[in-house]
Image 1 (tube, one colour):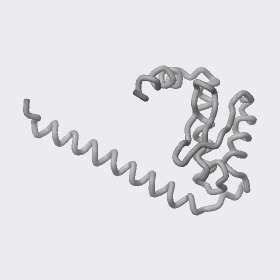
Image 2 (spheres, rainbow, N blue to C red):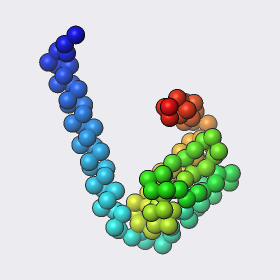
Image 3 (cartoon, rainbow, N blue to C red):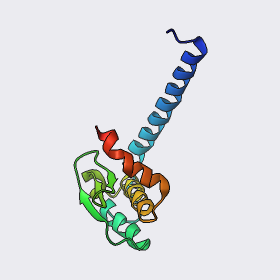
Image 4 (cartoon, rainbow, N blue to C red):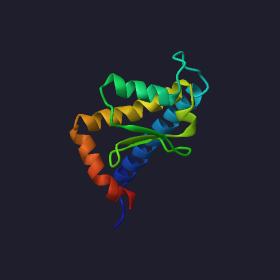
Length: 125
């Protein structure tokens, strides 16, 4: 029942790569949260514009709590954290656009989005 050295090295390498990627992304999010966007819009306004530009009219945009940025296919809504909903930084707008991308995938009946929607209840357990 012992792990071989190569298997253990593979696990460690995978964790190092994952943690390195997470560190890099968090660093960029932090960096660009201090850079004001030149669009002059809030994250909520950008989300409304993105949805409208793609002809999506039935998705609600809501303000949630801190760290609650997500698209919920069960009620077809986008929830944005206060820093994104009211924020005007590059990070706020990018986060809003990212969540709109999920709404667009759902509207287009994108297969990986359907799979994601189907497994969410099990994952939330």
